[in-house]
Each structure stands twice: as C-alpha cells, then as structure tokens.
Image 1 (tube, rainbow, N blue to C red):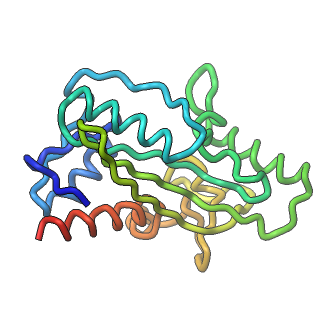
Image 2 (image 1 turned 45 degrees about the horizontal axis):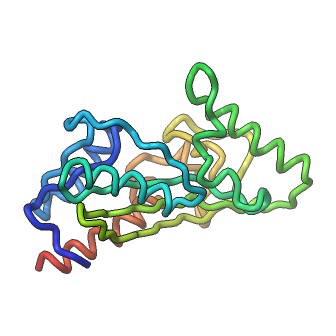
Length: 205
C-alpha cells in the first residue's frame, strides 16, 4: 500500500459522527482527519451499482477537489432471499419525502421475504467498502463483512438502519439490542477498518 504523505486525510462524508469515529481510529498513527464539510464541498452523485463503485466516486471526488488523500465508505445490507437486495440501495429503500424511515424499509424487506415464502434462516450480511484515494487517481480498496440472519419483529433501540432485525452469526442479540461497543467491535465497518489500519500500520513502521 502507498504511504500517506503529509499525514492528512480527508473523510469524504458530511457525517460528523463518522468523522469522530474515524479520527479516533487513526489518531495513534498521527494522521489528522479532515471532513469534506470544512472544504465546502457538495456530495457527488452515487451512480454506480456496486459498493466499490460508489465508494470510489466519493473518495476520488474529495481527493481531486482538496489535493489530499481521501477516504470514503459505502455500506449496506444484502439479503440472500432477495438476490442481494437492497445492497447499494439500502438507504434508498428508506427514503421518504420527509427523510429516511428505516422501520418502513425493514417492513418492506420482511414483507418481500414473506411474499416469496423464503425459508428460515433468512440469511443476510452487512457489507462495508472503504476506498482510500489519492489526487493522482491511485486508490486502495478494503472490504468488510458480518454474516447473520434476519429476525422479526424488530428488536432493540440501539444502532441504526437495519440493526433491529439483523442477528449476527453466533449471537443472541440483534445489532439493535447489542451494546454499541460490542457491535462496533464486530461490525462490517470494524472488519473493513481493521484491514485498512493493518495496512497503514505496516507502511508507517
């Protein structure tokens, strides 16, 4: 993996919570994380139909516009009984004129599984794809996954998105019931960031 020169990294997201999380992860390596918000940049249209494609759009846009290495992530849930849907359209399934409604989206997923009479266990996986891009067009991709199954009814008020119906393999609590620290330690994002940090630590030695 290419070394990060200058030790500055732009996060291709306007999400302040994500900025804090990522800044804490890379702080031990002496890397300063900046948000695209501080550069006044808009969010580019995500026009690809894969996690890798959309992660690349966001990271390369931020890298080109700021002249600094940029990190983006694209994530979602893939349900086997729905041929991998909603996948890259996970957030779209929750869109309403008044914002995102994930209980509605979870109802939609479960209703479709019922209509198709999909047998239990109704397996699914959360996916996270990170793209670290440089202004010259070079990039590195890191993918993370967590396997599990869907349960009904929704369980738990922790987490967000589809967490209340996702039961990770080997666990008795959904991501919606689980202590956030435990979830963050085993999530798809933790898997992807673990691979990214291992690479950064290797080239920083």
